[in-house]
Image (tube, rainbow, N blue to C red; front, side):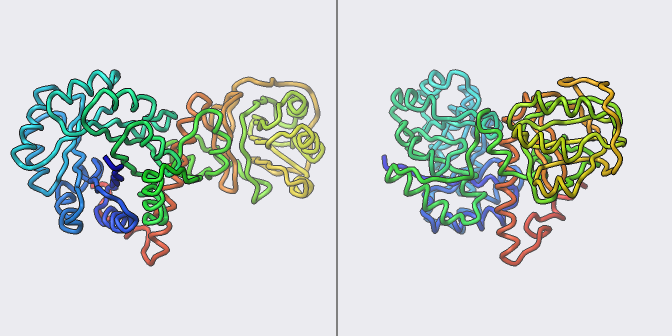
Length: 428
């Protein structure tokens, strides 16, 4: 069958979903999906409204049915859904009920194999139960860990006689791969929902799947460990803090060189206030691209200045973070070296040699280990534990993309409270 572009409206506010759908339909979207967050937030009135506004489009209700198959399919179908989604993890009895209800009420059934370990085996089983489509789905949370849905599509599609849909972080670069792998229905969420221009985004992805032509994009993609630095340099510390549920920010550590951004893995140093021996020794030990993070007890005198900075530049060190004092700020600014500190203080201490390099330290109220990722900008410094760096970098990218769309809607004449329907979401 000719590739179909399905838009997954994973919004929580119907007004924003409709605005995006209207743009995307002009860009060539074939099917419109009321995503699970939208249905949970707005109920099946979301499906009814989409049916009313887009009478000629196929409407998909992503109900993620797990039980009460007949009742939930009936509800969705009567609301205007042409296709209703049941989880492949549901019991055979529930899936059979969905299929029978779909026949009664004129809706087709898609079995979503999200989180199924043996997807091929389950796909064959549920196909025999009479579903109309199989969905291969990499969850948003799995995408943040650099997983993708393409690895098993070909094997599954070749084993079935019904169409296969695929969802999971698809964009204009990866959409052709999905088609080549055997998918007939390409489900796209963020790459359209978060785009500043949903019409253009939809048009590009539609062209990509019909012409099998990859169209480059810098957004709506998730990276692996090798991409962490590249991703972090795109996002802000604010994006990263939001992605980490407001954790990881160093309290009272600010940039002494505004306008510069810093990113790299930590080399930690613990010293005593004013003892600059270990911080200077760390410059010789540090690898290119690392950030030296110094716990100096949050007090002066200074343990870092111009001369240390010059050495750090020679070693191509990415920056320094000091929970203590720094001096020679004018010179450091002139050298354009990213430096973050709690205190600016003119007097230096003495090199007594106390302390250690490469041990766990506390800076700005956060426990930091060598190898943790450090991001610094004009808003401050955020630390990412190294074992979760891939996840949080990807989540920060998702936060940035979401804000790009919000920014666009505000610039069109709205306000933040109106766009996000703030009053509706205030805690009761």
